[in-house]
Image 1: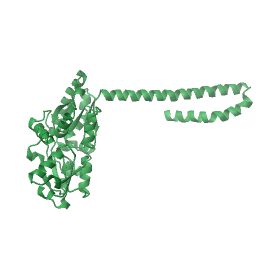
Image 2 (image 1 turned 90 degrees about the vertical axis):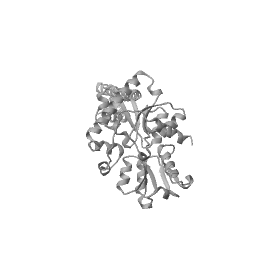
Image 3 (image 1 turned 120 degrees about the vertical axis):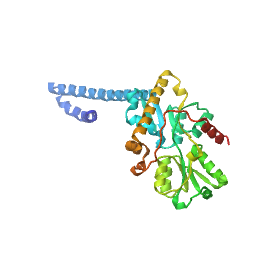
Image 4 (image 1 turned 180 degrees about the vertical axis):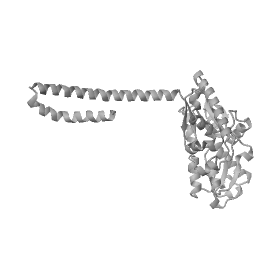
Amino acid sequence: MEDGGIVFCSLIRNFAPLYEKRMVKLKRTKIGTVVLVALVLLMASCGESEVQKRKISKERREQLRREDSLALKIGTLPTLDCLPLYVAKETGLYQKLGVDVRLKPYSSQIDCDAALVAGKIEGNVSDLVRTERMKKRGTALQYFTATNAYWQLVSNRKARINALKQLEEKMVAMARFSVTDMLADMAVDSVKLKSETVFRVQINDPNVRLLMLHNNEMDAMLLSEPQATTARLYKNPVLMDSRKNDLWMGVVAFRQKALADKRRADQLKAFTKAYDMACDSIRIHGLQHYKKIIMQYTKADERTVDSLPKLEFKHVSAPRQKDIDKANRWLSK
């Protein structure tokens, strides 16, 4: 209706000059005077409508900006370690507990971390290598919880790579200064290959990484779930699994500055309760119960979701100190 009004006002304006010419002959008549006054008033009201609409639009934008600034914003990725956050949102747990939590999706960890450093979000899902590096570079962080994320080094079946030692002169997709970078180093060191003979290629988006595997553009890559399951379904060999190295590097972190006031502390308390409730729900109902949510947020296909391994999602718990130490030792190399 508003759009129709704008169009009508525009037509009135375009018609006015022509009408004024016609009014020359009628301007001395009563009817001409009445019509002219009505036309002037109508044009004035149209002008006021457009001004009012712009004012309302500006006020609405300001309201949305203010609401967003007050909400607890958390960066997420298209990976399964974010599932408790997604379940809490889609099942209305945040709303039920009276907390405005807004999930901000990013396709790659580097973009998600950049948003955290810039203060665009209060927290994000990351890994200990990246978060410890951010801390070293001046961003004060508070760990909210460890996650169940793990990574597998998967090779391209068409490249006929079935062992780590065959990675020499091959391309491995990973993300710089992340757990995938650290795991690539561990893989190379474990078979005593020269680091410079294994070519690390930075591909930050895990779904793009997976697509490059399908398209035979990469020899090997590090993937977490659900991308790792998709790779296995297509018979791509798994050369390394971070779980076998007793590494649990997934984490949810918040900027300390963002949690400094009582309002934010109350939000975090409610968010903690929602997170734990979501973990309980996943444990009770199983991953398949949340198939549509997984597909929506990770872009995994139905076959992948049906083939996911059984995963445990734990209540909020601090990351292990030995995992933090492992990340810092690698960063200090």
